[in-house]
Length: 46
Image (tube, rainbow, N blue to C red; front, side, top):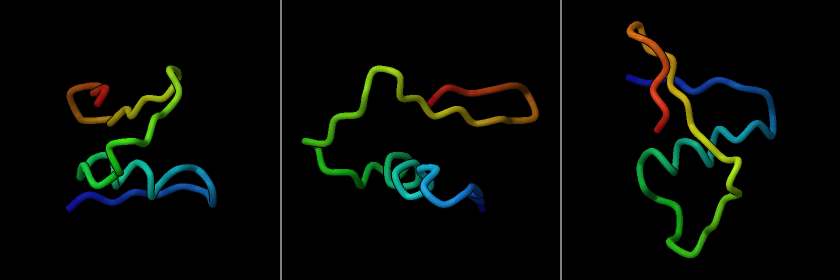
């Protein structure tokens, strides 16, 4: 189970949809966009 917590407008829905590959293919995010998961072994850039 993965929980996603953040303030309103912080991108929780976009992040969840990206991880599940549910975003439309024509959606383009800026070059600065990234998803980082903090794991017990370090940070994973998804």
